[in-house]
Length: 212
Image (tube, rainbow, N blue to C red; front, side, top):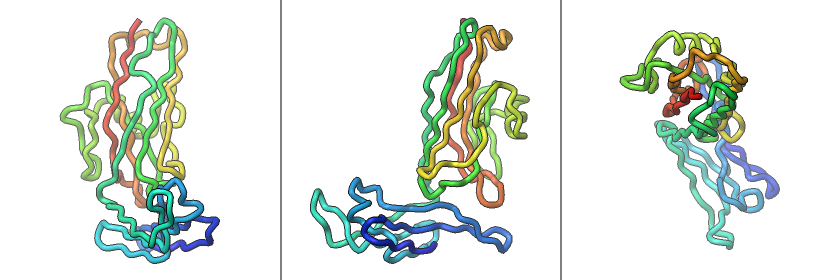
């Protein structure tokens, strides 16, 4: 972890790097989430990493609407919260439709590769990828997406997380497409990869039902 102290116009931050095979790669940036961070908080004056806990000291902070004496920010790198929001949970095959899946995790994972996985066989018991529990049962659809193939017309099912730790994948299905999917429920979940390309975290699964 490297400090990123900055002038008043910049909130500063702590820059995270990860070593794999003797090489260091940028993992992400942690900065204050204060609404007035750009004018006041200055995380990155001092930084420390102990186990899975990152500490970032700020010489100033906001208490209510008044400047405070400073602050220390703590983030647990082993407790990365994830969420997935679906724009809809069903698509009518006769008229087609769109499902947008928006994935969110902690900003220090910005820039990490992500992969959308799916299953037509449910979520329990799920499977393990590199010791990480993924709530999808392995089947042909799962293995295809794990291999980088998209049997359905997904857009941005792979990529890198944005600076705020988010990603959006879109399924765009035209009218009359894939009639054999009628009555099928697919489940999808995001996984984020580490610097070595192994699965680091997984989101919950969200359903998509195909109806008329």
